[in-house]
Structure formats: structure tokens, C-alpha cells
Image 1 (cartoon, rainbow, N blue to C red):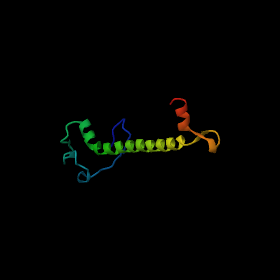
Image 2 (image 1 turned 120 degrees about the vertical axis):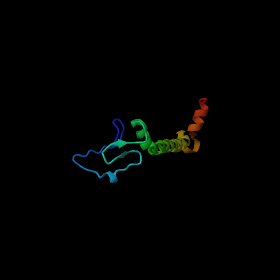
Image 3 (image 1 turned 180 degrees about the horizontal axis):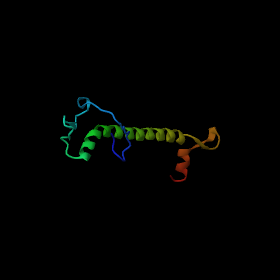
Image 4 (image 1 turned 30 degrees about the vertical axis):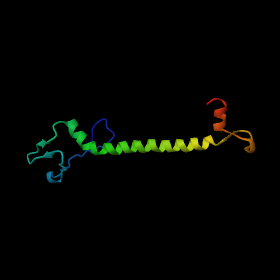
Length: 104
């Protein structure tokens, strides 16, 4: 199982017989004579059909990472803006005040 160059697992069997009626045959089948057939014409199309359901999951993982990064940055900047930059706490200048003072 698997496709070279793709980050998935591979299973190799030596001298193992899997009964034909135990094969998963949604996209391809093996007849009694041992002939392989599939209604999907090409290897790449079969692969695309098989992993199509995984695409959404991979996109959602990336989307979740970007969302978490945004939340982390927002929290960091929110607390960073209120940090005392210069002076004592009674006469402090915040980061926002310092940026405004230098024309930012």
C-alpha cells in the first residue's frame, strides 16, 4: 500500500494469501482468475480518489495551526503594548506611547 514520494505508511507481505472476498473493493477488484480491474482508468486518478477524503483533514490541520499562531501573536502583542517601556510605574510610558512619540 502507499505511493512512493508520499508521506504514508507501507505494508509489505511475503507469502500471505488474502481471500478475494476479504479485499476492500470499492475502487478496484480482483476476479476469480486473478485479474485486476477498476472503473477508474488511471493510477493517478485512483490515488486521487482514495486520498480525496484526507485532503480536507490536511487543510483543517494547517488552518488550525495558522489560527493558533494568530491567537498567540494577538495575545503577545496585546500584553506587549501595555508593557512599561520607560520610567517608574507612576510615570510610565507604554510601548504604544513610545511608538506614537517616535512617529510610528
